[in-house]
Length: 119
Image (cartoon, rainbow, N blue to C red; front, side, top):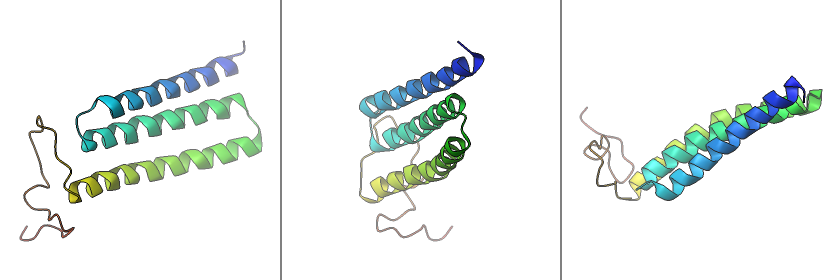
């Protein structure tokens, strides 16, 4: 086993672990807001880690360029998508988990999509 194989396998294993944690969070967390947050963070970092492992394991120029573009797109799009999923859930009236102590949008952000007024 070379050092390249060990490092690549380590990245892949970390990525698989993070994706597994995201899957468990999707099943176990109490509301759509927590689920979207867990999946957006853990799955995006997990996929980036797996792609980095593939970059290390297959060091061809074409593979590296394609995988680095995929990593960049993943890091730019997943946080925005997670935010928009949470916003759509809020605007559709999805309930907040009973243990939630703070609802910053509840008082001033209209369910019709209008931004808060008077602030």
